[in-house]
Picture 1: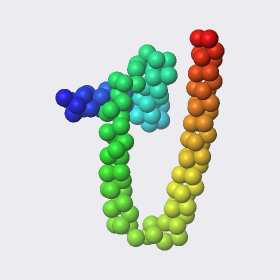
Picture 2 (picture 1 turned 180 degrees about the vertical axis):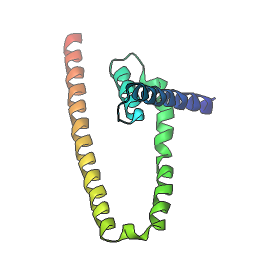
Picture 3 (picture 1 turned 60 degrees about the vertical axis):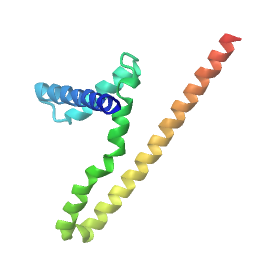
Picture 4 (picture 1 turned 45 degrees about the vertical axis):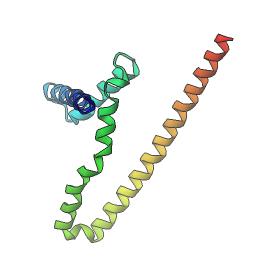
Length: 129
């Protein structure tokens, strides 16, 4: 039963990706449709129209198998040894720098969210008293 729920949740995530792609195609915008779908999903989650529990296990499963999606890219690099030359080093430095920036920005956003949640919890406790 757990696997059926996970597959259903993954289908929900795919539907959002499909909706985003459809919107991008209809508008003729040069922007990834999957990102638009994720932004729609984010808006629904933040507005609490859609509960997180509706996609939580499916998203967790997809994150768990995410490294498998990088295997073809790694094999592709092996097929192009010129990527390991000066251009490859520059590419590697760019990837490392962007990863560090992503980690820093994500960490700061998490801190902001955590402070906001602590403040809300504190205010709620004061109201209860």
